[in-house]
Length: 136
Image (cartoon, rainbow, N blue to C red; front, side, top):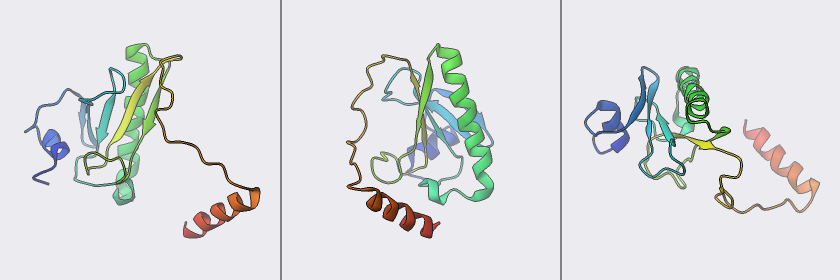
């Protein structure tokens, strides 16, 4: 897609600090990292969100994400990673991208996420589970 910055990074027309460039996708440093070493992994074709990723591309794409999630802590000495995908809401670029963020114990990342909302009862939780399960 001509006006997509991630497509331009994949094509090599916009510079990025690439960590991997493979047939399954491209991984590059986020320009606004949560922590240094925060990588974005994108599929090569312009796919806007996870539900649009064709089933035949799932294993290759998530295999790439897994490789990055393994490499980041091993390389940076982090204790682990936080791996996340936004779909539409909070998705700053409308191209599927997976965040791989290095984490260390005590890194101060608290309150970074949305507030929690408890179910009023087990019955309410069961109702939500049933509704979602029916859609699957």
